[in-house]
Amino acid sequence: MTHRQSFKNGTHLKAARAFAGLKQSELASLAGLHGNSIKRLEGLPRIPFRDYAAECAGKALLAKGIIADVLPVVHVRLADGTGQSG
Image (cartoon, rainbow, N blue to C red; front, side, top):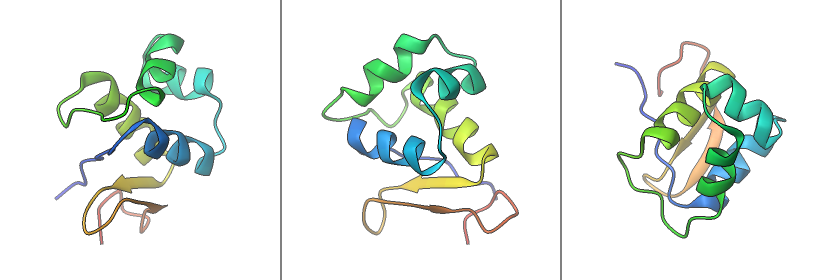
């Protein structure tokens, strides 16, 4: 089962992006998004679970080995190497 990224808010996404060592424009490019999409997301006080841009950003971060989640607490961590939570 693959892991689905989940971001609580813009600060959480920003932390995951920083952990990956990416600029907003780099993450946007990897995610196939316009650069303003990441800027918009990082400014949100709450990111909806089914936000398309957040899902694309999450997949791009996962490809870089970064997992962001909100359960059991808000966190960012390295993937276990398989692209799955574990």
